Length: 260
Image (cartoon, rainbow, N blue to C red; front, side, top):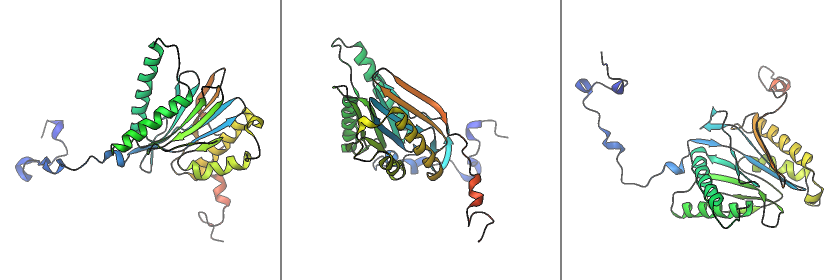
């Protein structure tokens, strides 16, 4: 019996020859960043009168496997900014450490100024563009929510290419196809942001989370939601959609045993 666990599962050297790891050595470019293994899906944000609401689900998928069901993808920065991450989880953790170190430097600085959400978004966009220019992109699409330097609600996105976009309501991932049409129906262009209440924005995000849970195979019914106002950031990371089940599918024609 082989008493060395390090060699368990490997062919015996005296029978098959010594293990040859030379095939792992390559002179080509690194490609691990261009094929993310564990990913998160949509981030949805809405601007309302007096603040911004943003939500994500808590699932990190290993390919098509719902592997990690308690992955928080909202990060609070300072007192008036929240970053929502979609895409590769390992790159999200790298950016999280990057922002944490920058937050510490800002808190210990002597100039007395703090980074607002607009500053933070500009910084992240430059980081994404720099890594993209080095052919080593951070495989993420983020939403930055909070307030700008003038105290106005701010919501903008930045993707792995460094491309930025701002709008009263935004979504990343599959949410750009499923959640944005819902938000455009609830909050049409002719309805100004000043007429959207906090309750309407939160209810809209919950409706989007429900649709994404049913329609996006990489989503789950547990989600995080943050409401950013001038007074505080209200972050809830263990919310769950109520009364959600697939029982209704039995009544759909063509599902299961129903053939007519």
